[in-house]
Length: 370
Image (cartoon, rainbow, N blue to C red):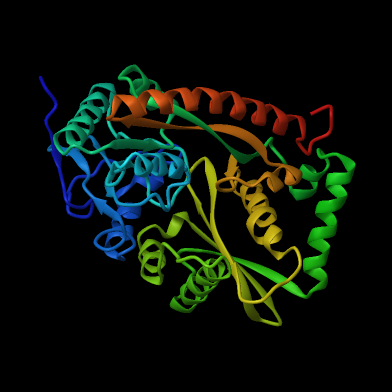
């Protein structure tokens, strides 16, 4: 029997959206995606127009967006867009299957193997019927990437840095596995924060108040302001998600003399900790490392989580115990001339990514015996 796939206008409007409890599933769940829609973080005027694909029984689905830019993806295709422009062709709009603003690998086609193929076929049909130049699947799991490759999609490699919990009893136990100079540096960085009179408190979603979310949103906006860019998310999103998934939220607040000055925001599932955003209203040396990395490592150890994903990019994570891992994306380019050129470019890039991964492995912070 053929799987019937439909197209919706929003995830929030689909009554039965499937869930996935494994790593990364939180970020393609209905609570996450609906909060993005209902807060206005995606939708009209954002360049992220939802058009999810799903089966009528609600047992299979994928989050699809029609995009008129490449912001918020963390898989950079600006050079491809520029090449199209030089050739006098339109690169946008494009189709993207992703969790918006979330560089976290996880399922992108929710369903079994047969349903996954049906969803991919429907995505390809959507691209072809509307003469869309390209379609992209960002941070899929390996099984999905291989299915896409078998259908002729181009695969692209990337590198992120994750921290792995090897059964550490506490933070000092973790430090003991590092090389002496890295261990010394981390202790110095944490001491600078403590000497500045900073204390840290950790809240889950049940304990957060409106004032906590307003403070965090201000910190988050300030981070983008300092980088002269526009924030993707807003206070409404953080409040909605805090209410919808309180057990998954970890808000870390830095205070001096009882006054909050900075905060970082994490999400957890049964296996992993995900570092997402941070911000500060005043500068304190090494506070970024404390709130974004060391507090996260302590959280992962305390909650028995196997992996801490610290976000996209960041070679500086190597010195703090993170290790390189490969990520994937898949791309379907309609124009055969550009498809051939991009395939050749990806072949060369893949070799460079492999060399970079190997170099990062050689510079891990752990003792040689590790």
